[in-house]
Each structure stands twice: as C-alpha cells, then as structure tokens.
Length: 356
Image 1 (cartoon, one colour):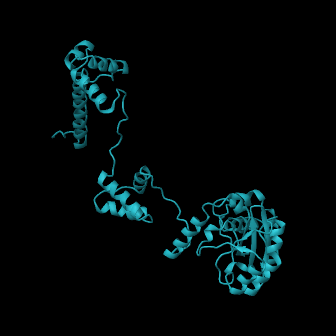
Image 2 (tube, rainbow, N blue to C red):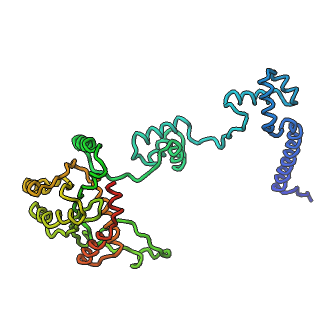
C-alpha cells in the first residue's frame, strides 16, 4: 500500500514560515551591520560648538576631528545655518501633500475668480487632471491662503448710477459731526407677518419626534396675515409706531406724518432744527409730500436710491420681529399689540449705538 504525502496546505504553511524566519534573520543582520550609521541627534550645544569653530576659521575636516563627528554632519549643520540663520531643528514635513503645487494654485485662482464655486465643482476639476482628493483636502488648501466658505449676504442690486449716488452721499457727509447725526429722525415702513418670521428656532427633542406638534413651528399660506407699520427713531430712542390701515398712498403717508412726525421729534427732544430721513419711495417724494415738508420747515435728508442697508432702522425692524415672534401672537390684534409693546422696550443705548 502506497503511503500518502502531507496535504498541500501544510506544505504551503511550512514554506511561509521558512520565509518569515529567513526575513527576520536578514533584518537582524542588516540592522546589526548598520547600527553604527544610526545615531541620535546631536544636542544644540554640539551644533553651536560646530558653528563657533567654523566662525573661528576652522575647516570642515578639523572641526570633525576636534568634535569627533562626521564631516557630513558638520557640513549639514553649517549649511542649515547659512540658509536659515539658526542651528535649531526646523519643522519637518509630514505626509506628502495629495495636491500638487500647480493644482493647489489653480484651485486658489478659481475660488478667487468665482467666489460662488462649490467644493463639488472643484473636486470634479481636480479629478479631471488625475488628482482625486476629498472635499476637506480642497477646503484646507483654501483655508491656508485665507479663503473660507461663508454664507453670501443679500444686498440690494446696485447699478452704476446707484453706486455714484451712494459715493456722492458718503463724500457729502464725511465731515459731519456726531452731533449732526444725533439730530436725524430715521423712518421707514415694514411688513410683519403673523407666522412669517424666518429665524431659526431650536427644540430639544428625541429621535423620530421632529414632526410632533410641540417640536414644530406652525406655518400657513401667505404668513397667516400681516400688518404694515410705520415707525421712526433717533439716537435718543424710538418714536411713534403706527399701523397702516389699507394700502399706503401719498395722502395716507402725509396723514401719518401730520399726526406722528412732529410729536415724535418733540418727545425725543430733537428741537426745531432736526433732519428727517426717508427713502425715495414715490409716495415719499411726491410733490404734495415735499410741499408739506416745506410748509412745516422740515429739512429732509437727501437719500441715495437702492440704499436700505444705509438706514439703521432696518436693524431695529429685525430686533422688533425677533422679539414679537418669541411671544407667539395668535391673531393680528395681538400682533399689533406686541409690536407696540416691544417697540417701546427698545433701549436708548441700542438706538444710540446704531446711529453711532
């Protein structure tokens, strides 16, 4: 009867073990032979001594013999001193960058040229040149040159004539004193919706309870109704806040001014020679309205078109809407009541800071 040999898998495992043993022996011999080459880093004192002897006029060979260190080490220490002016260890490079210098510069140029470009678009562009990297790698490269992703601000669309008028406005008032701006009565209209405030609200909730009624903000079509308000303020505090009934036209605007403008100026102690600010809405600039100002001897501030961002009352409207919707009005009557209460609570400090 013929005797069977060992299984094939056993032969393979034996061969693998022999290879491992042979590799271990070779590594021990290699590192043993090269242990002399691997030495610890020289102290800063030794490197300074090398530099002192070099400054004293000694050559590389004599310095090497005097300090019992290799000539290549002496050359390396002196070369670093000549290039960087120090013998201190410089920061070492870590993992080689995944982006080449050329691609990194291309990404920076693209982001500077097109600020709205997305990381996905830049990631696809790098993949087309054979460099597949993660989005965070691209964002880190942009961060290093001072480019950061931020939410774009919404600003009024400005044409060339708008820009010129804004620049002319700035130049005409650049020499105005702080006291002059304290004499300005700022005004504007705004619409406040019952359920239309878009500010984020956070709720503490458990998983899978996002749609429970206590964790949601109720919304309805068209904001559930709204009210239009006219208001004014100065650095001395808030003036009158009036609800506008129906559609605002020139006659209704003049009626609001007749009943509230001079009284607000009196309450805020602006004196007779104050300046009234309004935007360039057609009902504000109507001939009958301008004649009313002239009849009342009220100086109106010349205002550049498309410039709501220059009016500090916009900040107060945002404060008002935030405060009112925290109180969750349930109907338009409550909405008007809460608006007037919160308007009266705005501090003089806040008003003065905005004007300043």
